[in-house]
Image (cartoon, rainbow, N blue to C red; front, side, top):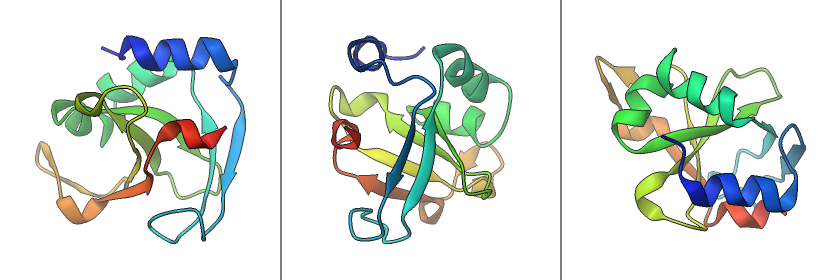
Length: 116
C-alpha cells in the first residue's frame, strides 16, 4: 500500500517521528505547516481506518505526516507521482461521500524531498 520509494526515503534519511516546519513563504498554499513524519504502520492506519485517509487512498493519496498545529489535517504523497512527488495537505473535512473535494487538497511542496 505504501510506495517502496517512500519507505526507502524514510529509511535512508531516518526521519520517522521527526518534526518539520514549512514557512508560509515555502508552502505553496501560503499557510505554512508544522508536521511530524509518521511510521509505516501509522500511514497504513491513516489510509485504512479513518477519513479522509480512506477516501484519499482511493485517489492514490497516502498519508505520511500529521499536523502538529492542531488542525487535524494530514499530509499526503500521491503514489501516482512517483519518487520525489509533491507533498499535499488534505483537509479533514474535505470528504464528500467517498471522494475528496478538489478544493480540499492543497499542494504544499513541489517535492517531498525538499523537507530535508
